[in-house]
Length: 147
Image (cartoon, helix red, strand yellow):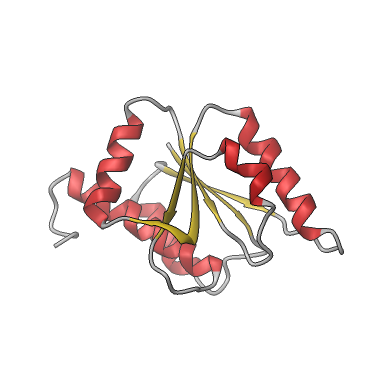
């Protein structure tokens, strides 16, 4: 199973394409929406929530951020296929608008990934991530979607 964590109020601007990819992937993807904190100590509280969540399970954890390693779709496919051999779940953590105290999370993360250097809304990153996961599932099945 692939899980995606994001602090987000809603997916309203991208809800239709997100739902479409979820439908195509059946139950291979679970979105974990965490409610954003609405007070002065946002970064610390959201970091604590994330640390607590990541500490509970033996997942392969990938953080998405524009400052880290970039992979092609094929390399992304190879990474996920390799990690599925040893982990029940792969979880993606989308870097959100307020950021996190990464020094508190880094020891819990297995891989750091970006899609490209451009900064964009985290909800759009979610959509791109879901599309790429769908794309590599089609590569695995040798379908024409990925061509």
